[in-house]
Image (cartoon, rainbow, N blue to C red):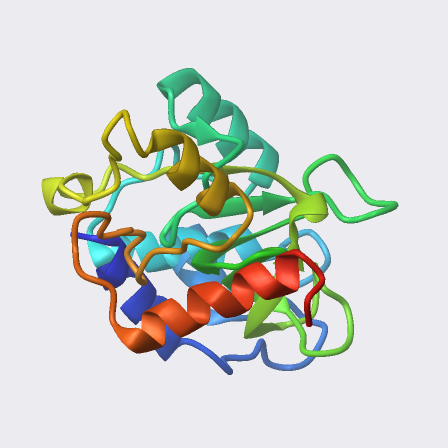
Length: 213
């Protein structure tokens, strides 16, 4: 399976809530623990991520409900990444004032200032790490500890993302500054023609980056 398969499943869960509110009683926990659970001991942001990947048939480094445990497992398996994030990565956050690893989600899009991710047990305006709902959230890079990079099918690895030596410096700069972004699967399509609307988007990002607008 590919990153897009995972994201397709995650998108279908948007708006799902625990019932009743503030109970942590939700289908992702029931699946993970094999029984219905509730209470403060069962936050479910990671259980949601595990559920999505299990339903997509994509394995993660470890089956766990802990952000920190998955992070350590990813480091041991060589799947821990701290830059050049992609759609389909499992992002681990550190919010101000909390633990070292507070929350998780699945990156849907990488932006100039951070990422857009689909997350479980968050909210639109309330608690961001125990909000009881599946939401799409925009988060800044400053809150990201790193990501777990799943082993997707080979189709994901045949992306057109490797520039020629003559253009590498420029491509790296454009990626770093958010001017050159990929599609939903993270493919930059470096050797493909640029449409007028794509050119307009890149010029607009450049103008924002340089303070022209």
